[in-house]
Amino acid sequence: MSSWLLNLKLKKKAILLILVMVFGLFLAETLNRQNAYGEYRLQIFEKDVQILNIYGNYIDTVFDKIEGIAYSIVGDQELQEDLVCIRDSSKTSEYYSSLKDANDLLRAYFRQEPYFSSMVLYMDSYLFKYGNLNVDIEDELEGYIDATEGKNGRTQMISEEGKIVLVKEIRQSIGYEISHLGYIIAWVDFSAIMEDVKSEFPGEPVDFRLSIYDGDICLYSNTSYPEYFQREEDGWYIDQDDLVTVHTSPALGYTMVIRTFYGDIQKQIRQVYINSFLISLLVSAAAVLLSDLAINYVIRDLDNLVQKMDDFGMGKLLDQGGEQKYRSRGDEIGKLYRHFYRMTSDYKKLMDKYYKSKILLKEMEFSYLQKQIQPHFLYNTLSAISWMAFANQDTETANMVEILGRMMRMITDAQEPMISVERDLQIVEDYVKIQKLRFGNRLNVEIKISEMTKSLLIPKITLQPLVENSIIHGLDKMISRCEIKIYERKEEDITEIIVEDNGPGFGEDILERLGLENREEKDQIAEEGKSLSETSGERDSGGSGVALRNIHIRLQYAFSEKYGLVFRHLEDGMQVVVRIPNNQ
Image (cartoon, rainbow, N blue to C red):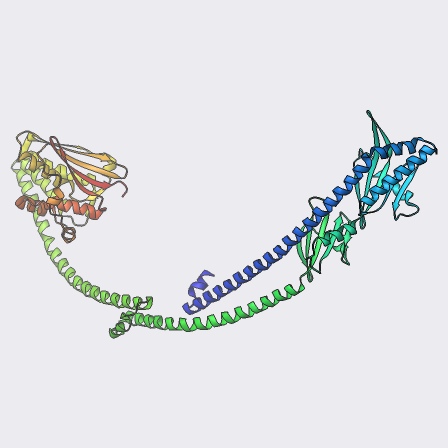
């Protein structure tokens, strides 16, 4: 997939990108619209839930009132006395008087609650009936009475289709004894309660279809298919052209369902979706067309630039007048053209320089071949002098010449610009041997370098000029013995090789006074790679310190700017520190 996309033409990539962007915008718009419609449905649901909560609270208030009447009947002391007399007395005048008084009291309670469609007070010896009741009501009462068993006199609200039946036991408490008197059973007209609730909301929609359930029992419904709602959980859903809200009243535990006509809104939503899709198609087509025109305008200049690159690669000369067309353009195309023409100009200059360098290199190779003859002549001459000294039994002169010859071979070997610290120390030791023949006991050199440090690489002839400086600045300017120590010091990622002497030394700003003032001089020293004899000769004759300058620059070229030479004053001497990296 990635290779296919990378190999696709730039124009096709741009068109593909635009199509993806248009599709992304269309998808985002669709999702946003769906969220908006979902939010609208949620608002309808929340409004319906508010209405249902008000209905539930109203019904709960009515139930509290009805239950309060039941408690009034049960707690009526006069009524209890009449019921005791009816239960315990035979049919005497007192019995009939109590019967009449109890009947009057119960009828008053019955008329006090308008939602009672009928009511009975059931006693073992008598049955009080009020409202519209069947003649054989006694057979139905047994089921209601059974619902109060084990309830300790608590009021029971029994749900039936379209109504609620209130059942409560009447008991008399005498001291610690409780005696049974009878049962109050009242049928509550649930539809009448709902009609009164509706009257509290004059602004209720005409199309307001409501169903209320207690479990599987439908207490109220003004819709033709109420049984459908009881199978749904709380929330909202779309059923054909209706939005259905299902909510369980927290006060009553009843499931309340509102069905709202949603067909017109659904049609509008579908029409909006269709219109949006058509508009998105038109916008996409227009975007692709306009993008094709814009891309062709850009690709034309890029194709022209690619053609010029191909021509330049084939060696054809460029028309410099073509640059003028894009010189004043401030966009990326103009910048590409200007950079291309600048690159071709720089390339031509570089090729000219390369051609001249090749000629110069040939001349240098010829000169190098000539100069190779001179070291061989010098080696042979030194070897002959050494043998003559041995023949004349001048061992000291023979050893000096032999050491000098070995040093010259290492110094003039141009094939190894970087050598190990161990080999560079060998040059130092050979040089010290020659100087000790001259100065004798006035010179003492002590070397303490670990094997690990000896394996590190260093530019050739780094340490010998430092020892030479210590000898020259020490022995020439002091009467006492010259002590030179070469040792190491490790840091986190740097190894320091320290050349320390007891001579007078020189200032800490030695690098500035040595003349490292510009980069061109550094480049010249690095390119020339002057030998020890050349740098020391310049230093000795003019005092310019070319050897130290050479060492410092070669160390920085070999490693980086953070390495090189560091000079430190001591109370009785001088330290020259060679800083090289641990990890090479």
